[in-house]
Amino acid sequence: MADSCPAPEFEKFIKANPGHTVISYVNTTAEIKALTDIVVTSSNAKQIVDSLPKDEKIIFGPDKNLGNYINSITGRNMLLWDGACHVHKEFNLEAILKLKDENPEAKIIAHPECEKPVLLVSEHVDSTSSLLKFTQLDDAEKYIVATESGILHQMKKYSPDKTFIPAPALDSTCGCNDCNYMKLNTLEKLYNCLKYELPEVNVEKELIEKAKKSIVRMLDISEKLGL
Image (tube, rainbow, N blue to C red):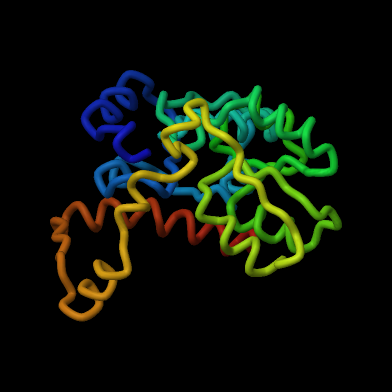
C-alpha cells in the first residue's frame, strides 16, 4: 500500500488542493507521514474523522477503499488519493457469493480496505482486530473472511470449533489473498534481526521529527476520545 502513494506525487496532490487537513493511514512511509496532519489506523479512522468539524476539508490517503468506506459511514466527502492494498482490491465478488450460496450459514466479514461491492455483501466490516473479536463473540459457526489470510490462524486459535474460509481472489492461481510483502518475513529473518539488530534502517532526524507530529496528533485525539 505504501508503494501506491509516492511522496513526491502525494505532495503535488496536497499542493493542488490547498486548505485541506491531510489524514493518512498508518501503513505509509515516513515521508508521507511528514506530509500528513493526522495519522489513523483502520480501528480509529472513523472516530478521528468524526472528531473534526463537519465543514473541514480533508484529504485522505493512500487507501481509496478505506477512504470511501469512512466517507459512507461519516457522511463526509473526503478527497481521496487513488491508492489501495494489493490484497484487498483483488477479492472476487462473484466467487465470494458462490461460496455464500454453498455455505448459506456462513457470515461474510471484510476489512474496509476491500472494494465497495465486497463490503456491501458483508455482514461485518471493520479493522482486523474487530474482525477477530467479532468471530469470538458472534454465534455463527462459519465465516467467509475477506482480508489477508494470515488472520485465519488467529481466528482458529481463539475459536477452534468454528470454520473460517478465506475469500477467493480474482486469480485463483496466485494466492492474492496473501500479502506479498508480509510473506517476505520469516522466522530466520526475525531471529537474525533480534540477535544482530540487522538490517538497520536509518531515517534522517529532521524527517523523523516531521513524521512524528502526525502520529502524536493521532495519539492526542485518541486520548481525548477515550480510544
